[in-house]
Amino acid sequence: MWIATSTDEIRKPTTIALGNFDGVHQGHRVVLEPILNSTDASVYPSVVSFTPHPREFFTGNCLKLLTPITEKSQYLESLGIKQLVLLPFDRELANLTPQQFVEKILVKQLQVTLISVGEDFRFGYQRKGNAIALKNLAAEFNIPVIINSLRKCSGNQVRVSSSLIRQALAEGNLTEANKMLGRSYCLIGKVVQGKQLGKTIGFPTANLQLPPDKLLPCHGVYAVKVGLDNSYIKGVMNIGDRPTVSGKTVTVEVHLLNWSGNLYDRDLTVHLERFLRPQQKFDSLDALKQQIAIDCQSAW
Image (cartoon, rainbow, N blue to C red; front, side, top):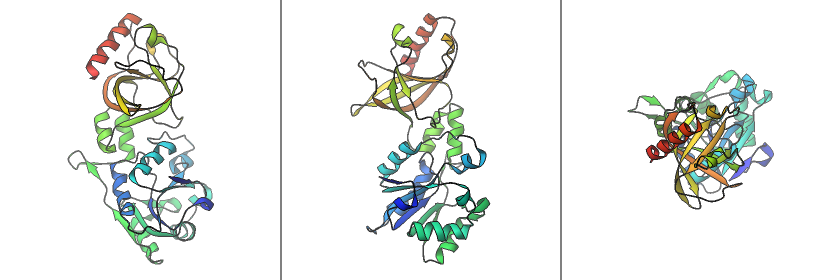
């Protein structure tokens, strides 16, 4: 996939899906379908997003992401997207009126031939433009705009959104989060040296170093599958600050079941399948060891 971080790098002409697409969830895939189904081989099916996230720009607070850029690009590429355009979200871009955004960004810089958005899409200064306004403005340049209905799940009662997925992960509701994502939530990181406490009590763990902007679900223990050597290994993962040993930092540690070997410096993709229990403090290492054995048995 080609990733363009400035307008000079964009491969064009383009068909585009507009939005942040954090999570690349089921609702996002509805918006992506029209540009993936385009039969014009001369254009680049592209996702046009923003960096930093507009919410981060306006609040000044670092936003944890369901899919940091590297992970997002992997998912988009697997779906058939050829280009990810990351428009620098700064004061100049934030101040563009809806008409200026269409003329300057979409028409001149992106040379758009087709646009796909969700029905809740907003753009332009103070978010004054909506999907209907985009369709009307683009029509002046003979650019069709496809407005897609929002995807729902849980008996058609819950709208799929990145915000609701974050909320579900924070509550340990992994079932609902994975349902909205359309896949298991993943943590992708490099195995680094840890305290090796797990090894001393008979449960060696791989300590994952994750991107700093990756959203972690609630602290606790999870049943996971780990992609390794073109196969999946079942395991148990702990996210937390290890209160039993007075830990001071949050760690992500994975114990692989019925597997042994050296994982240091390897990149692992951990698929979170089920939330087992919240984090808790034990009276002793023996009590912790007993609980880990129970977790391993109940996980699979």
